[in-house]
Image 1 (cartoon, one colour):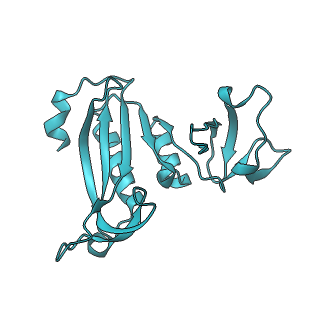
Image 2 (cartoon, helix red, strand yellow):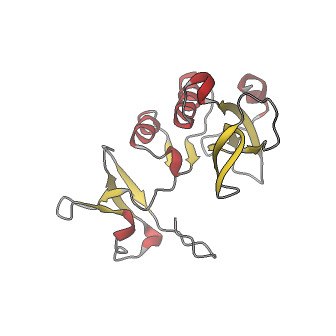
Length: 185
């Protein structure tokens, strides 16, 4: 699929690669082998469906999202997790070296130390969310603490603060975003 769409992209180092999963509702399925019960953010719980992991390209302009790759989440058939699919797709893009996009966007599901280290080693920048129970280290003196127990830095969260994540050998810049509905990321 990538070979078909690569010539159509207005690629640049400022472009983005977005990796996300979804669940396509198949509650009335009769015999779809890859449909299974899995967590769906859309229904905020378990749902029966097909769960593709998608790799999408965007130049960052007005809503231009182009599907580059997808992998169905079907652990009964291929024994792969959604994280395995994330890494497979990312490593394939990195190995090909055809995309100029340097920034990868993904949610907390893919923000494990293994994934972060592989993205970092490939020389890419990432933006992700972290789960509130993740351990971070502001300095050697303070030691590790849960993310949700952090006090705001002196200049506030808008400038961010550099932290170390457990099992991640490089610093990351941490920001706190509060949505209009009160959700904190």
